[in-house]
Length: 115
Length: 109
Image (tube, rainbow over all chains, first blue to last red; front, side, top):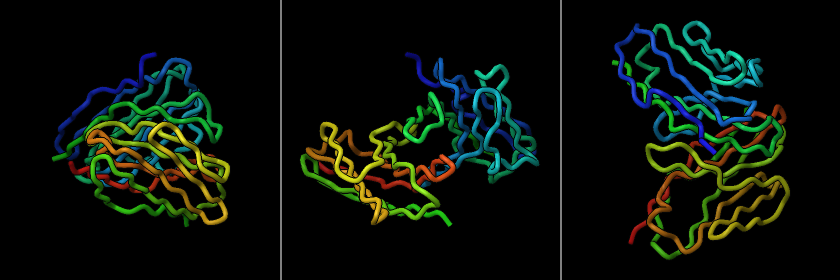
């Protein structure tokens, strides 16, 4: 079974520029998560989707971040405009469901550097 | 507030045993995960505990005490490839995963 796919793997942009990240979850996984992770920290949830519905976006900075999951499969996370503090690794994860025992499968992440 | 505590860093010797502790205070409890994360890579699932006691899976075991808000991950017969960060995460009452900052484990020959 193919894993979670993310692109790009690395991105360097100047502040105030827009940036987008793409994620393709494991086939059949209805739940999709976007996290950001800073060095030496655990992942921080940005948004969680159940199929195409965003069911938890309370931690998403909506003034500059947006996300979509059209047709309940692939998802895109966008930042516009990017700030220096947005430099981090952006992880996408998926799971079969949202029950407490469902493990999450993570993609390799996108390392964003904002200069 | 919700809080997960783990040691920042631990060092152990190849072939030895190491125990990584995790204490938590969360709004509700619906299970606890341990994930392994090698530097520059994604976290990968190790274990899930929801009932008290010890669960063994090969060289890795995970223990949970819900009354104490405490878990540990036990790694036996350490290998160099076990050098990684180990993340503890608790499922709260909203089924949201609350992550600890992780414990960086350094294995020395």
